Image (tube, rainbow, N blue to C red; front, side, top):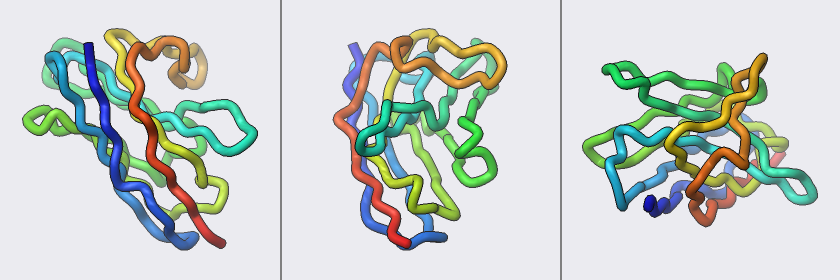
Length: 132
């Protein structure tokens, strides 16, 4: 069982930055794949970024095309926390951002995005609003 708690959301102007945090508890954090998803009003929840450990010292990361070059996912295993640094924010980034965890995420062929249904644990979300 994994419990997740997001923080760091808020209101920011276009072009600004925010860093989201997700604190995890309940089991060995370093072996769990962690992802960020978002859901805008009237839209489906979508993958943003994910980080997974492949049994060695390397963390592998995947990004949605909308996040590449602007967002950075990272993790601190000592703090059981995963972060999403978001730069150059746009109004279309406005959404509730969710942290999620899975033993083995389902990665789609082609773009390596993660499937929502493959994530076993979810946080309650944090609102990010980007004004124009």
